[in-house]
Length: 149
Image (cartoon, rainbow, N blue to C red; front, side, top):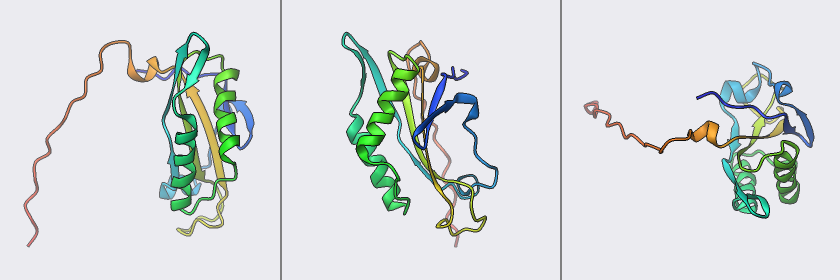
């Protein structure tokens, strides 16, 4: 099922157009998978959109980055505010939020320390992720490989 894009994505403190969210092919994240992310649900309520356990998700995002030696340039409060703004600006009643902290374009080597840390936050309609029908989870059994002796 195709993802239904929204108008704006939050990038390093600013709202940008969905189609302007781009990274360089030689970014550290592309070459070495140096990123952490969260997946957060936002539900429609009679009082308006409600982001499920927002502070806990954002704290875990910060903690994951710290473990990965990526100090987040934004505070917990700034990230929570950004999530609320992404939902508000895109006029979403319910949605899925995806904050991502990644190493961007800098040095091309394995050492990530000279690569800038970038933060993106997008949201989109949850139905485009899960579909409208019942969820089915299929477990696949993989054959065991023989031990190497």
